[in-house]
Image 1: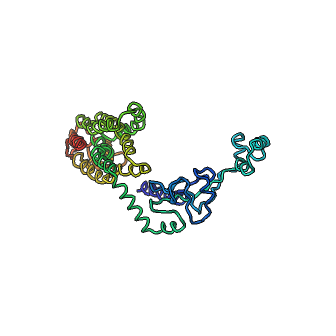
Image 2 (image 1 turned 45 degrees about the vertical axis):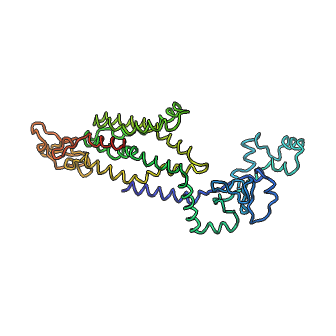
Image 3 (image 1 turned 30 degrees about the vertical axis):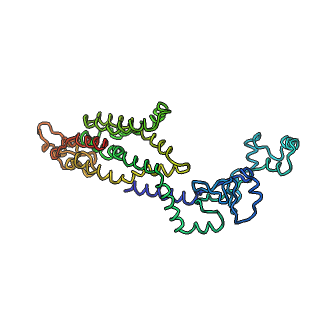
Length: 398
């Protein structure tokens, strides 16, 4: 409970920092635009400035206001450093107006006084809040008021959703994402089923999270190597073999339901994952229209909405095919695996407390033992250790 509270505190603090200090702003240099005359000739405070030859609206095809369109409320961008500091740090790249050699070069170049001042000072950048619009919108003062209307924002959001859904490539990405859901369920099985499977059958001393880290380290180290070896190969020529390798990987732990089989499963799973997962992103980006790559990545990850369903299914399968042995554990979940002699009475205790379990009830009285796994618990109902992994393999292949 304490960790959950700390996590939510960090989430809230991060949100407050982002909400209070992060701003979506655009900074441009009015003296370095594609059509400088359009900026100089326009004086109206309610007219948009088209500097890219895109029409009076200055709105690009992807719905984002052009970076060269300067709204009338643009403010001067406050520099983060002063000319004196730049002169001190970069004396050759940023000469000051008091530099005799620099001034002599300017006089010899024949530049006018205005140009001399510009070269010897910081650029006069302009900053304004990034404007998002549609093909029929023209930025002006009244547009800010209209964007403040919640209904307008909802309408724009729905229009963007419709715009994405009408693309045929959107459905390709969406169908592929949901079709691969059965394969990515192995990630859920690795997190939910594998730890209790190893701990209940082979004890608390098994390095469970070290075994799980095979996938983590493999995904950190192998993608650059695989990418270098498969450069120039069409995406789906890599994606499909990777999916099949990952789909078939649980067969190893089904055939060898032990620690070694778990390690082999994690290794083969990782090989398949580093083949298809990065290439899926590359394929998704290639299908996305210019400026909509982020939306297509979101569509490709839409299968994550089925994540809670996968958690429920894996929990139910774990309870059915990998039952626990609560009678041989303490209230904290530790096995009562230590033999203790208290006042001449042998009993089984855990690392934290006495369990009230006596070794004489475990079998051979001549060699009293305490359960270190569920397999040694007298009240535990055994299950087939391979059944779940066969089902996972079949489910992944479908």
